[in-house]
Image 1 (cartoon, rainbow, N blue to C red):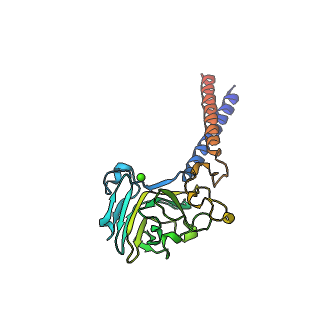
Image 2: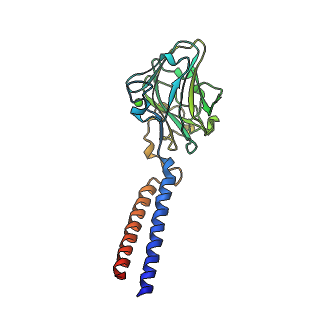
Image 3: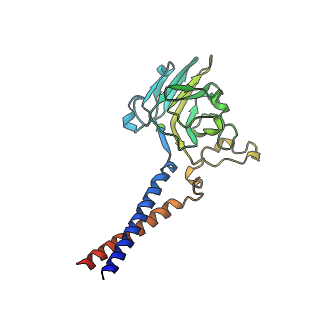
Length: 250
Ligand SMILES: [Ca+2]
């Protein structure tokens, strides 16, 4: 009888360990969730806490014309200058930056450079926002009068994964108004038309739902629910065996 209990206890421990491993693998998959840097869903630019922003500061000499407008960052630029926003984030697990933006006239992407900082060091990408490349390797879609998700490939643009701040550097003589509805990091690139597809539906490429894209790590969007189900089943089995073993011990 004792050996039976022992072997049951061993099985229970084994199952518990298995359940723990599954929970740990789920935690490791956390980078499949987007990291929202700032959604600007608040009344004032400095009130980061109310929107749970991962950004912690804003500033720059173009910052005087920065404000919150309908849950978006509104940047009115009339000359050269910069607007910056930074925070203690870890973007090392992410491939893409998603900026949901629109402009008053459209085409504002040629009026500024998107630069960034790693720690205190400002890094320049060396090209206008409009010339950055997306996941397909093609240029990102132009900023239009309607909101769209503009997906920027970090590696493709030489953006280091230690990025902790964004800098919008406006060009000399450029003027206009830009709205940023949100800035986030993701590994799920929205579907883009094939490279040889010409200009067809080009402006729509950022609008596809990220959830439709297969998990880049596993190639299967169902894997997360499968892991959860397996963890639940083995966890329940472990509890049952522990209960049975205790009962047998009495
Ligand atoms: Ca927003």
